[in-house]
Amino acid sequence: IMAETEADRHIVRGLALETAFLKRKLQERSELDMAAVRWVLEKSREFYWTATRLVGLGHLHDGSRRESPAGERVLRAIASDRVRQAPHEPSRRIFVDATDTFDAHQVSGIQRVVLELARHLVALCDAQIVVIRNGAFVRLPDLEPVVFREEDFLILADCGWNRLDDYRSSLASPARAGTKIVAIVYDCIPVRFPAAFAAGLSDAFIEWLRLVSRFCVGAIAISRTVAQEFARFLQSREIGSRRPLKIGWFALGFDIPSASVASSGALGELQKLSSGIFVTVGTLEPRKGHATALDAMDKLWAEGRDCAYVIVGRKGWNVEHLVDRIERHPQNGRRLFWFDGLNDSDLAGVYRKAKALVSPSLAEGYGLPLVEAAHFGARIIASDIDVFREVAPNADFFQVANSDELAARLVEAIDLPRIAPPMETVTWRQSAQRLYDILRHDRYQIAFDPAARDSLGATSPA
Image 1 (cartoon, rainbow, N blue to C red):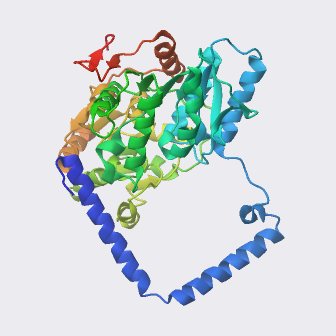
Image 2 (cartoon, helix red, strand yellow):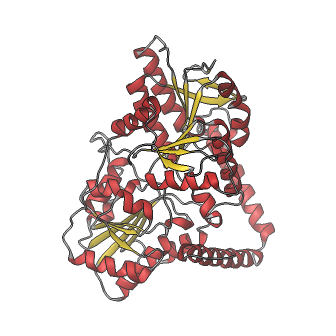
Image 3 (cartoon, helix red, strand yellow):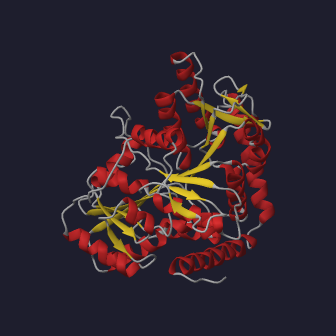
């Protein structure tokens, strides 16, 4: 693999460690009596089935009762509220696609953004939530088929690259009707760092960008950095867009967690710590740079520094070696903590306790934890990437994947006051309003025209 940048080299090193770890685990497994293991597992499963049926919990495994996905429950509730409050359909309709989120059992990352935008666009402009079923868009909550009109807007707000076949079959109808289709672009990372993702995702993502360039009249990114990257990819050999496309950007929102959200009690050990706490928030995956942060913390612990490191995020892909390292670490449970899921109240508690947020990502589309942590007064220590410079220009930066530089920033933070850097923040309502303003009033910042000499000309001030 050709590794041209430090970020590339970091991913390659991580893949090498992951491959070696998995190979060692396979060798260990081959030394077991697999016939005996299979027998024990089969008997355990039989006991589980029998016991759960006896106590009336057979639905947990026999399919007799299935709970709706979390995304579906929230989206149906939002759509039902809209129907009750606005029974008359507006002449110019706005549809928000939430297909992938609708089927999500756990809501985080992009799904969380989709829910917030859907909720506030419904309130702001009477938007309607739609999902794809059987090759066509249907509206919530009753799954009634949508007959698109020329004056309509359709916002592709979800992870379309996960469902390419659905979108290939469903976008033609609104396009033929003259509906203005606009996509939200969260990032271009699978194109930039394909090795950091599961096999095939980069190809699927490129195909999604091709669909966007084919069917959409506009694309709205979640940061100026992503908007500019997307514009460059439209010119690339992989995408090669032949149609003009308007490109804009807006900032993601942040709302203070509701006081009504009860703490889960997961943070009991942290409350006992008097040392400086550093926290990283985000799914464990190669591009997030957790290994770099852990390397830096190991340097501080070796020097006898009194500090702790908290990781908040679900386990992702290609991180078996990292998970094993965390679980076997001598500081695990003492000064190293990993929470694979926290509610808003507990996450707010972590931010309030933290000396600083450490964000060692190689690439991001926005960086919402930077905004969240600053709101609760924590300093920001971040890898020096363009989008972090955009979102948090006054943060303390270190060279990408450089654990020595990060360790130096951590030492500085231990001795400095806990003062958050000033940065612009918007609520989710303001974020949805900015998105709506771009859409409704044609306030795109970039005009991409493959036929023009300057195909990335600005249409309005940044």
